Length: 426
Length: 95
Image 1 (tube, rainbow over the protein chains, first blue to last red):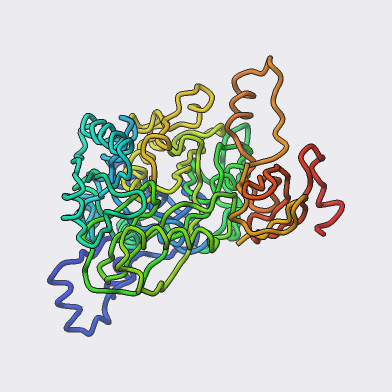
Image 2 (image 1 turned 90 degrees about the vertical axis):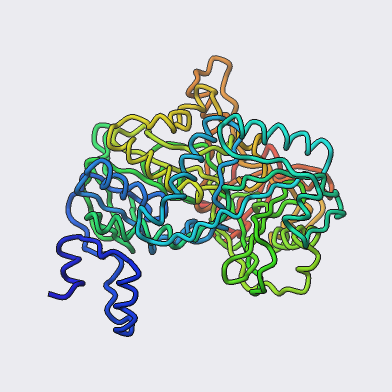
């Protein structure tokens, strides 16, 4: 039996190692098996997850790994990791103001720190620091308060003088319009490889027996007596004991199929990359006032973005005025980049909530769960989002880390207002 | 880029305008319970399709108006004044 068929039948994971790499190199790399299975959908699953992005795949992985759920499927209307998981700027950090957010996002960063080992897949986490700038005396005071709050939350943060900023980013123009007054850095923050996170979770989940079914769009829910019993898809009806959806950019759309309303506005967030150049920026630089965030990829491209296109849209393109603002902001901070050409530009649809904190946990429909409203910052939350949603689905009660992120907070008034607290790129 | 036809100034570029969110939200009466009140405050119509929304001609006449716009194609089907009823695009067609 070929190794490929063997892996399919047993669901066993063939580990990546130096030895397997050497063996495949000798065979001209022709013997690598598919990284995940692509089975036909079954009639019934114990847990059905809608959306094979980072959150859906990690939820499936932890459900199978930690809670022993055997019969799981992840459905996607397109290809896995093809939504916001493949469209973000890969920032991985936990410098949040409020204790609930800090606890959740630092859990995520800690899982990221061990993720390559956990998944046997290199997610290329590079903890190069996330440097946030201040452009006035008052903003500097705000930054000090923010950095103190982060430290009280047991997360690392370090306030920097303009000279220290210049040392970290030699190309920076401190004397730009709204001169740089200093900043703070979270040194454990940085970037990681977004496709690898999706592929790594997909591979590991598939090896644990999770069915990943791509090109299968959910068209409606089958709900009986207020309880979800399955979904209608473009590939027929599928029954399910429990259903969860994590469909960044389409949270309202899928919630409306299940008959409830959510506090979400969907908008476009653009990102763009320059042509590749030699290494010149070895941190993740962000500014709330000039409104840009930029890092340099391993290929040498500058990856950057800024504000969202602030009107409801599902277009995934982004308008020119915002693109121009983002570029202008980058050149104001680092004028040396003015000769570079842009190679690509795109947009993802971000689901923004009134307090810019996520929506996680139960829905008004029994046995239907969701994770959404991640706004512009869902990528960094993938490991913790999956871990806590798996707990929530397995135990039918919210994981302690996400109790405050339920839909009911808008009724009770217990908002987690990170929008006001953590500013840009959050 | 959006090109928006202000009812008073004519067609101008997107950067002259600012977005004011969903139109035709009715404030509940004072005896509303918490569910009705939070639904009014926070929940949104966020359709993949025609959205009825408010815009302000910020760097022009400074006046508010409504538009009916497709959130996928960004096509603007109707521009109408504040206080006017929501147009029924299904019946009257998208002109």
